[in-house]
Length: 94
Image 1: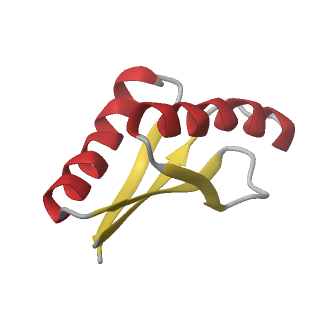
Image 2 (image 1 turned 90 degrees about the vertical axis):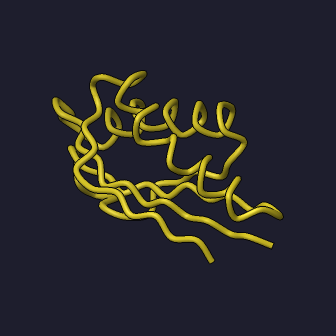
């Protein structure tokens, strides 16, 4: 069994409230789930308007598959969500 997690520190410019942040972050998390068949959630900076840390997790029977799926996520976000900037990412395979 292979468990992989990628954490992404993202910047969401122009957010003037937590409600606006949630309205921009929720569709991203749902789309990540649909696109990559992963679990995705906001895990930090919950009370900061313009920043968030999201985690994406994959469970698989192949380490290579887990790593390939997770490595595609930052580039996909940059390509499909131009209003979100990735500040940092960290990939961990267990």
